[in-house]
Amino acid sequence: VKTCPALSPHIVPAAKSRSGRETIDFADPAAVRTINRAILAADYNIEEWDIAEGWLCPPIPGRADYIHTLADVLADSAHSPTPPRGSNVVGMDIGTGASLIYPLVGAAAYGWEFIASECDPDAAAAATRVLDANSGNPALSGIDVRLQ
Image (tube, rainbow, N blue to C red):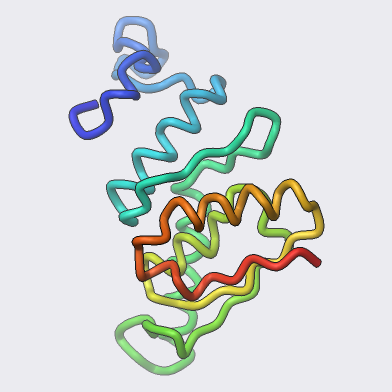
């Protein structure tokens, strides 16, 4: 809440949560969107991200884990102690959706380039808006959203 005051209305007090700790209401799509924005800003320097109501709103930590696991597999296959970084890695996200999560995380965390393919014109437009809103972030310049 200190780094993202917008989370404040979504906090479930410890006394009302099953775990006995403060949390957010993950059944509330607005809460999930807000925590996603906070994570993307804090961990990946992606300042502008949103998704319209009705679109799949993926939880960022789980999606990021896929990218980090892929980075580990690439490091292992190259017999390297560290994942490859930079534009020598090009990923293709087929069905990227409006959220553009895999390309955003892969580009921000590792500098990878991505082709983000989408067949829904509205989802492709939403993904492009996310890129446009973050045009000042050079790490994202290697993402190409394509309507297929």
